[in-house]
Length: 515
Image (cartoon, rainbow, N blue to C red; front, top):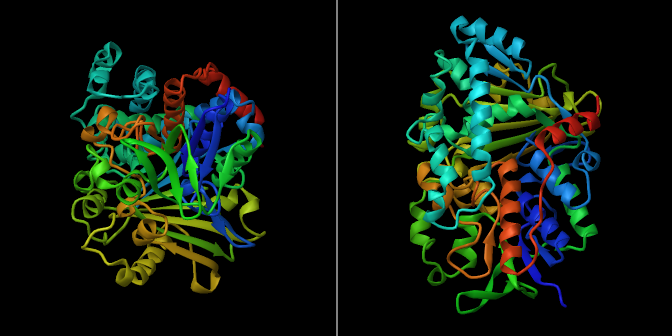
């Protein structure tokens, strides 16, 4: 019998994982990627001296991807060596204290106590409650939400009180920590979703819990080494990856696409999986009249994450500073309001610096550093013209980075690349330059988010940060498992099973990591 044909659009982490799983299940998979390399936002850049990640710079909760690798006959930690970081990162408060976040409970309690002694005991209580929360919600994050009826599942109704749907993360954390600086240390992770902790639903307190419970990892070579390995493995498994092949649309039979169309070719298939930026792809590749729930007008009214101003610097010096530094503006709340509500350039931006050369010598020549600088900013908005603001904000950003201990002079910079929200939108094809996709507000989660089995067309499926469960590498890989099983179910093929336990994953990963 002829194997079922599936076309996957976009070789980001979700598209690569889906391709691997569907190939393992016996499908004939063609993966179409508009760029000349795999990875999407998790790709790399640089020159013959310096290497950088374009987007994600650390690996969190490797259990899910290791399960995917194992099902496909591979071992993640043998294919991509990783190092667990300690400290995980430094949180530097402007004009204030710092916390070197570590999974060592005694060390964390001591650092918290130095800021506010009354909050030290809250750390253990936070871990205990969020351990329970993750266990309760894990089945929900591993299942599709195809309609509102799925919200009425008995298990979801049972754990709903744990969700605290009307609380932000910051409000939730007040149960454990009274000092606002300590709370920020456990809720700034909402920026991984491109949201303010004063707006982000309290469910996402599990993000910081995952860091302390399972660790923060650096893949040797950068996060893009993970997607490069996935592309290599997918090819070994028989996936036909076509680079420089952007999909411009579909040929239809009613509501069912029959072929994916590129500038040079047509690709017939039984099913299509979209891993491109959701809103951008809908607006550009699928005619508005073919969409009901996700028309252009409705897309425009949705809430989107913030964007980022990026600087990738090859610097002719080294810095005796942690691998990750998160610098928190003195008026953090105002900083976030400027980004998410006022849509203006913040006067005193918070920022993040990755100084990965202290961990990974492969990223820069000896005695030099590959620095990754990120400042959250508003997504594309009429209030900001990056063509005019780019140069001034670059100078402001570099001055701010000096405050975190990175003494970077113009003559030290050997390589530089800047990416603005305008670049994210036009060069990287991200709707409004919202680098973290649709916001994770309560009105855009579960069945209210674009569904893994896309509701507006037949035989079309979604994977990635724009669908359930959401943004961030761990949940994107979970979306790949959900989506691949939906495709297999609809094609009449056996679904894949995932049986390895998270404790086994953690222990095995630590055995395989370099010292």
